[in-house]
Image 1 (cartoon, rainbow over the protein chains, first blue to last red):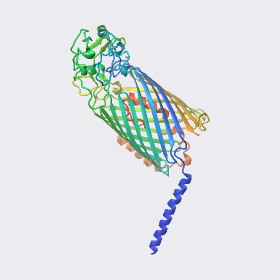
Image 2 (cartoon, each protein chain N blue to C red; image 1 turned 120 degrees about the vertical axis):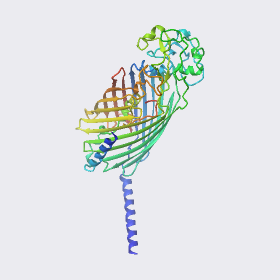
Image 3 (cartoon, rainbow over the protein chains, first blue to last red; image 1 turned 135 degrees about the vertical axis):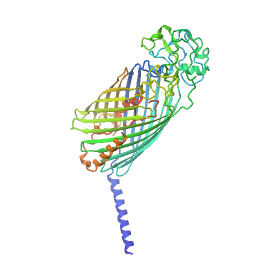
Image 4 (cartoon, chains in turn yellow, green; image 1 turned 180 degrees about the horizontal axis):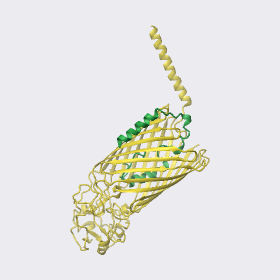
Length: 486
Length: 70
């Protein structure tokens, strides 16, 4: 009887304590996000190089891209935040334009025939077949010269009352002309040790689908069942290596359209971060990514070294084919690139940040990456934020990147037709790169400047120059504006 | 390599048992530039790297999927 009373008293005390704690939490709980935030981000990117993958590893890589996005973070209550991220990216590419390199001379008429439909590629041809030319060094006017990638992502997160545990779920959708993606995922974040230690686990799935665009000569070859007197080829003279007319060209594999158009990605990420002192903290990340499906790009050509070469255009320019002086002859593809239907990637990274003093902070990053295609890489970067004043910070940075070639990479005319897999995409070649960056930020914690109910909290401007130890180089300028609601 | 990373994590966990920085001592740690992740403004830098480089991931950005990139 006494024991029973003791249990009842303990139960009442325990329940009362929990109730009191909950009440206290309700009173003093700090909101995860105090007010709605809106971020506008925009960028302009430009690149140049001589190893275009669409034209088999040689050719003009000029590309420009303009992108913008808006990120809206809404506190639904003290614990929950909904974040919506929507944006677009519009590019124009010399390399992609050469999916149909003959468009500049009107070979495919309206320039809309790089796709998967069944109409004739010679529809609307505006010049005589004998005048048709093309070049890997000259941008074409075909439909694939430009595209817009649009994306939207929604993320919902919930944080526990003690602020030591957060879970989130997200979904995304993106689309461009030849590619559609649906993604979803989620994660958990647990803080320990008086919020000195954080452990995170997340997973993501992308279910992507190609709407393939093929090199125009291969697609046309498939449409006319190899008859070089029909369709696109009707009236066009195909030249051999010596500049003589020939009817012997054919893709090495005979060429069939892709049957499996899916590309699915499954990834899991583990992160661990630790405060080391009042001025230093470190974090580690590891991802395991499994991709399955059509992992090659169906627009990218490959030329084999052990088969004869055939061209359309000016016979006199064949001897200068690999020179950028060639503006009027184009080599017909032997095949599109072909890569294994699975790939497992394992990137492992770490960050270490150190607060030197009120003026300087050091931000460092290192990543080692390897995959089962034989590609391994090292990435190291350092950024040194310099606080010029309470409102202005200067961001010089440097990044070094190096990678080995994928097992399936070889340059123009160096693959063999007996290979099972092949690509001449120089993004999968061996190279190293240096990237220098300069950034500048303005922060007003009081957000005095206003647009309606939103105050401007910060402005970020950054510029990066990226150079490989090849002919490839690029630069990007980005701007970000953060607004907070009053 | 994975063993080395796990060892580093283990060392960090061990070290964490020795050092506990109190909330009121985290003024410097809470500086925005001490964030152990990329900032939103760096989003497009990461995107172009994901497109142009063979390696990706372990930086909070995409590690494949969602685009016709490598």
